[in-house]
Image (cartoon, rainbow, N blue to C red):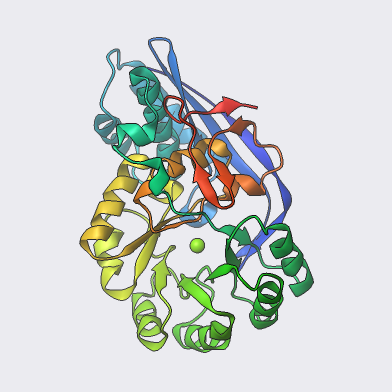
Length: 339
Ligand code: MG
């Protein structure tokens, strides 16, 4: 199997701010995996919070390339993950890029879209939220107004002006479903106070109110407020699912945290076994990685697959979003087209 890759920086429509900081561009690595004349595409969107940079993705792929070059026959995706684990532990975005390319390749090989390979009905997909980053109340209201085609908004919180921000968004969009994401900004006591202040805005759920490792805090918040609590930063890989399950109502799975479609499917089934609801989210990514996640969306309760909508120069076309509904392409593999 032949592997090639190159960095690609995506330009955002506007700077994107969450409790942890502001992002102006999205640094990705685009991957092509070729076997017997068929090429699958993948993408890594490394996120420093999980220990990755474009340079670490490239270093991982440099080490994997000769390993894959020795594989003359096609190999199962499970074997591919074993080979990647032997090259290095962790590196989830790098592994996700290969996993995504392998599923695209497999789908093209068999002439079927990925959702069909997985036995899923694309009409079961939930609507995706559209994310409003942290800004002034006026700008957040303007963003909410521009996003009227999306019935579900995810509003980033974790600042002293959350109340004003939510008020502005709710006044602009009285009928929208609004979920909030604090990106680990609060202590448990703060979280309870802040969430209680925000309940008048009729929220759907709260994502990651406390720090990544603060399971006690998640438990305390969940017992103190009536809204569902979803773990994102606290639930990264399959082994985290049983660990966080007693303390939350659901988990947010991302291909770039867990290492691709294969481990994401494991996480979804583990979550179901622990009676957790399941969200899939994303980093800021092109249509390659977003479309890969969207192929799993029929398995989800909540989708937050809007990363490509924040990008100005996405070179690909894949999943479309129509009034929040994820419309999967029916071409083989990911079903991508180059713009
Ligand atoms: Mg989140």
